[in-house]
Amino acid sequence: MLKPLGDRVIIEVVEKEEKTIGGIVLPDTAKEKPQQGKVIAVGTGRVTDQGERIALDVKENDLVIYSKYAGTEVKHDGKEYLIVRESDILAIVG
Image (tube, rainbow, N blue to C red; front, side, top):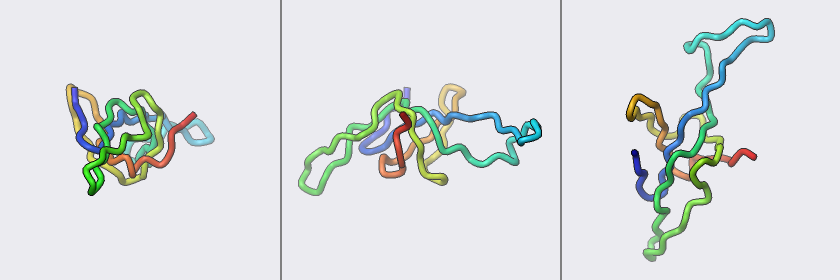
């Protein structure tokens, strides 16, 4: 399993099948990049200049919305993940 460092978070991207109003399914090339995912793992937190560790606000299994062009895409064990800094996460859903 992947273990993020510091203030980084590993997200499994949630892909939705997109259809037009008329019911036509859009191909991958026409879709917008997804911005929602499930948190798989979180790092230990950010370290301040004084050496204090600040815990992350997100936790495993949170459904989050993140910045459109944030993070680094990686493949591990046949699955695609996104590694982002906590500051790239905009909201926790529900």
